[in-house]
Structure formats: C-alpha cells, structure tokens
Image (cartoon, rainbow, N blue to C red; front, top):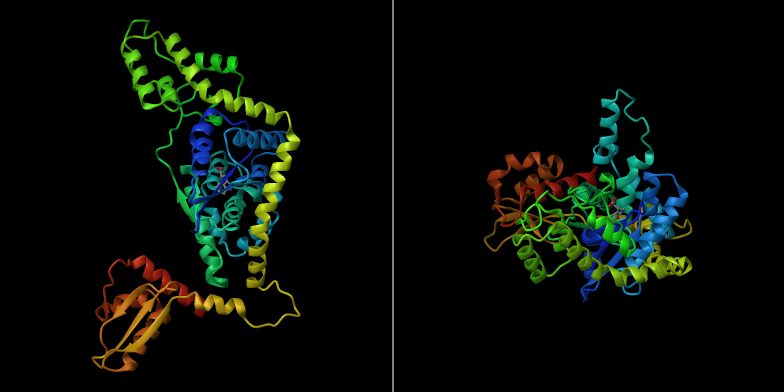
Length: 432
Ligand code: TRP
C-alpha cells in the first residue's frame, strides 16, 4: 500500500503556546499515527531567517519547538522530523524553481504585497525594508514541499496562496522538464479549534495574549486566572456562548465534561471556581507532556542528535530526486551520452491529439491528457484531411480555436473548460 505523504513546516520564531498545540501540534501528532500516512515535519529555520536576525533566538526557538513536538508525542522514528537547514538540497531545488517562477507571480504574494502597501501608505519607497528573502518566501516553501513529493500539506488559511503557488511552480517545471514533481494539495482542517487568548481574541503572538504551552503548573494557573470574563456575580447564570474560558475548556475536554461545565455555568458557578476547573482540566493533559518537555530541554544534545538523524533520513529521499532534477535541466556529466532523455520524458508527459477512423468509415480525433483522460472528442469528418486541419488549428491557436470548432466537438462528461485549456496551453508551450 502506498502511503499518502503529509508534510508541514513550522517556523521556529517564538515559544509554542496553547493555540499552537490545539491548532497544529495535537492534530499533527494524531494524524502521524495513521497507518496510511507518512508524515514529514520540519523546522523551517531558513524561513525564520526571513523574519528575524537574532541568532540566539533562532537557536532557542528551534530547540523549544523540537522539544515541544517530541514531548507532545511525535514519534521521531515513525515520522520524518528534521531541520530544513540540514537538507541543503532544499536550497538547491529552490534555485531550480526560482528559474521557472514568474516574477509577477511573486509580486502578488500576500506577505510581500502587504509590505509594499504599508510602504506606499507611509509614503516610502515601495520596497523599503523589503528583503529579497521575503520576496522569495513562496519559492523556498515550494521547494520544501516539492522536494519530498508531498501529496497533502496541512496549513492555516493564511498559507493557501503559498500552496497554490507551489502547485503552479511545480507544473511550470513539469511542462519544461517532464513530470518529475508532484502537485501538492492543501489541507485545511476546519474541525480544529482555534483558541481564544487571554483577551478573548484569537490566541496569537501578534496579539500578545498567549499562554506558553509548557509554562510551569502554578504559572498556568495564574495565567488562566487572568482570562477576561464578564462581571456576573457568583450565583448568577453565565453564558457559555462567547465565553473564552469555556472555549478553552472545550478544546481539551470530552463532550461529557463540556456538558457538565455548561450545567455549572447555568447554575451560576463563580468565575474564580470556573477558572479552577478549566486550569485543572488543562493541566491534566499538559502535565505529563510538560515533564517530558523539561527533561528534553535539559538535554539539548539529545534533540540535536534526533534532528540530525532525521535530516539524514530526509536527505536519503532528497538526494536521489535532486540528482534526477539536475539531470532533467541539463546539469549533467559531460562525458555521458547526450540523448535527450529528459526531453523525451517531457514529451510523453504531454497531452496528445489522436486521429483515427471508426467502423462507420468516418474520421475522428480526440485529445487525451498525459494520464490518458479523454478531454476533447470530435464529431465525424468525411476526410482525414479535415480532421487534421482541425487539430492543427487547435495546436496553433489553442483555446481561441475552441469556439470556432464548437460544432465539431461533442461534450465530454466530467471535463471542464479549464482542463481543456490547460492541456492546450501545455501543448502550445511545448511547441513554442
Ligand atoms: N510558511 C509556513 C508558515 O508560516 C511555514 C512553512 C515553511 C511551511 N515551509 C513550509 C508550511 C512548507 C508547510 C509546508 O506557517
């Protein structure tokens, strides 16, 4: 059985908080235990360099995040857990991808555009304080994903555009050099809770309302006591709807436990008591992980060793693919036979027109995708030459010829216009 490869990157910039745990770490650890999944988790430390230039902070955060994932139960022997910077093939691939990425595409990336807009609003030069690293962020991220032929990439909504770009970059590469890269799919899990922070807004570093995941027990109690609540007195019924404290509890508790607290809210539990209940429930889940975390943090050499071993296993996959890609683009051994291997591969990976004659004596053509899917089907022609001329028009004019030939084409069920035009574009790109 071939496994579905899930891959995701975590940028080491800061200390993991409860929101990271509930939104990313816990679901990832759970899915990594599925037998039909092969998981790749990596510390995106090259990406962290784009966001800051504090070496100590980067080192510290890399350690804390690796320790957090391990403490939360990630089995580093089952999954691929590595540091991006331990796999130099990723930066090498990044360059190959850079050379097939339109600059205009990167101009439209949200993060870059946001910086530009901010500069414009402030009356600065458009690119003031914008590094080329920020501009290239999506390409490096595409390299992370494509290097391991990931099928599925679980990310937050803010990363959807990056995934679209990774797909576009992969298809450009494939058009030029053959079907070597796998187009990844984005996975957004809407069932995963987003936690409210101390002030009731989404828990996020940028709002400064977070609770560190592995803060000591008494500190956790104190922080939970600091949750914003309304002014209802003990004995007064409390609303669960809109109660950040209740949502926090729900993210950790079973349905039965949640119902019990709902009852207590209705019966007018004092906020101070409710906070105790929530604190104890969270600490019950966190305490064993916190103990593991503390012992891992006390032994950084062990984490270093785990990450290096993970990096080697990752490279065992990256090196052979990189070799194939170098070969495909022409970074080749000069003494080697110069047969256009990659070009051949590219050709066989293109959609194809097929012209043929049916038992009725008439002539037809069809367009099939590289994978063999029927995309276009013609009506009957009396002469082979007519069928050939229609194919030629489609090849030369691409999508523009579709409208003129409308009467000559029968609809193909389950195929949409976008698939057809994509195939025609591929063919015209290959002919150009
Ligand atoms: N950009 C992602 C974030 O900020 C982190 C990341 C880097 C990533 N490379 C990746 C996520 C590859 C998924 C796949 O969250």
